[in-house]
Image 1 (cartoon, one colour):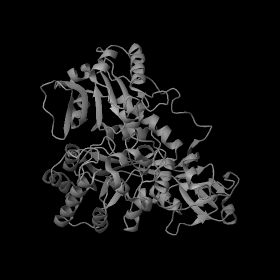
Image 2 (image 1 turned 90 degrees about the horizontal axis):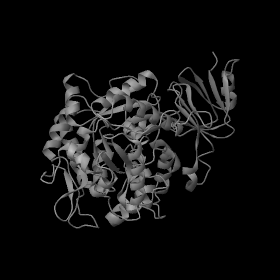
Image 3 (image 1 turned 90 degrees about the vertical axis):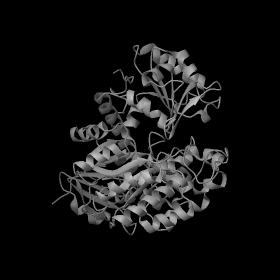
Image 4 (image 1 turned 135 degrees about the vertical axis):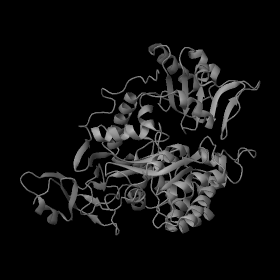
Length: 547
């Protein structure tokens, strides 16, 4: 029997238990048939075998991003992107909003994403009144880069029913000016009022999924752990997109927010249901805020504000009620927990869940696990917790951490200490919060450099091989799928990527300059550099959320 595809003359990083480096791989249908030397694998070549000469380049298992927001990413590609190089100030954003308003029908939503006031020349937030000067006939919304803060114009506030007399919701804040009037800033749970009225159509969401998929495969991402977005339709859109072939990447889908996983538990559905293309993942809640705003919940106040230590969405009792029931009913459980106070509370919940309902190999997770101090790492290791940090954040937000947390910033995403403690760490981008390119995440984990060139936590640096493992085998382990993918071994799914150089031989400061030349999923080549259509072709259009 001959192979369908054979790769020869490569730096094949298998990511197996011994981190073996091979030369060649044979693929038959959707599985890896053989791994070894050129001589060994040439035996698999027949008349119809496609032979790919790697010419020394790196072949890797497909990248696994263990926490991103797929539909959110796709929608940002349809909105004004405040990260564009042409946008340097709030005035630049106003200009883009005015242009969009001219081409958007009255009542159509105008959305800008990727906003970070700290990166604008003015160094401050836009206000409701500035957005009103653009238009009061359109709902205008700006979403901060972290996804935990929005700025709305008066039209949006009217649609939501929020006014100057509205009381701050639990876990959120309505921003106000010096006179006490709403200034359009919506922090954390205060955004819920907008989410209830801004509902993209299923057609727009399906288009967003296709755009996201095209981008992801170009970065070598073959599996994503979707961290939620537009519940409860989110799961159906993703499943339908996978079934139709519009979504090429494999999906491990979190069930976000307590009401949603309660409904699923009532139907006896839980983590693991599905197949190798789409599978139900953990039950997830949000405990605290963002690391960059910052609104994450900390045990000591921020260096920049001794009166502020963040926002919590849950009390310990309420968190226990939500997640212990899900654990009891068979879910892998997880939560967004950035600050050390939030992480501590989540560990308390894990301990209580396992005390009441012992379970072997639960693989409960902590999404982000940002400010993870040594005492928390020790508890994680004892409990067998999987952490899902964002090493790509260093390259974009590292200086913000130093500003707000001083010496504590060395403990942001302490991957080195976690690995030494025996914790399985799965890499993630949290895209669209930050760049979804896993090579930037690998670069961040190895170098831990901020935009200004400072190093955060020198002792937390890891090797290139360890960083690759974060985005391959460890990601598969985080979804109970390490026997099917995450390494290049016989019998595993043929999810493979080719880089344009040898990742183990380039200088570590240039890892983020590497590019993916080819992506294979399930034995099918779904991306080739220079040959595949761009995600924008015939897809990108003005997003319109008219009800």
